[in-house]
Length: 318
Image (cartoon, rainbow, N blue to C red; front, side, top):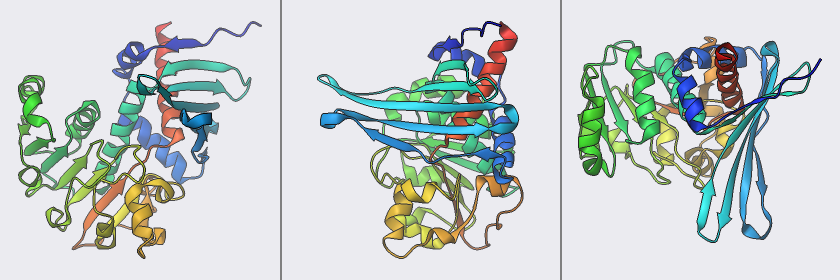
């Protein structure tokens, strides 16, 4: 029997199909399986190119019950005109070893990043959380807003970024139909004042939220960027917060604030739980009187799961 050719989906096709995927539900199923040891999550692999011409980061994972292996390859290639980052995800069947899908990873990564944060918010935010702040105003920040919006009866939403003034009219037009209507603010301290949940969605390599702005009971989430040792909160804040992450075996080794904090006495043993443990009800609950921090670095299994959901949508559409 002839093996059908795997589909190639470009960024526009992936984005279109993502509209038919419940990304948060997919991440919930994934991390429940992860917490029960039913998926395989190898460490990321960094491959440096010769002559300092860039690198390739490889994220892989196995979803045994779904019968798939997947890998995302993210090259950073340095050319005479500058550096360029791209990413491609490949999905293969475990029974045949044959590829099922190739797709551009941009929209897929945006959605799985935001959906992973949203799952953490649902599991860690106080049940009566009402005030939401988002630091960042790019596509990933807006995807966070879209996925987190249904999770709590928010009374107030504030959005802030360094260049927010230049984007204000566009954002207000785009977000004006949401309820509550997000408020665009120019000052970070005002954006997070009285916030119950703060979503950090920036590309900053240095803190965007100072310790004095983090109050007890607040949930702060962070995705950061691929800049070396990037961190959106001060490393010393970890000793005063309930700390969670997407994967306790990998995140502390690469998350900037955790690496820096560990050099000054903080221990990865202080992590109260990862997302798999949270999804399965195995993690320690946040202790009262402290703020809570959730750090996501992105996992290969997240890419594999989202590629699988895209593949299923694509198969139904064929």
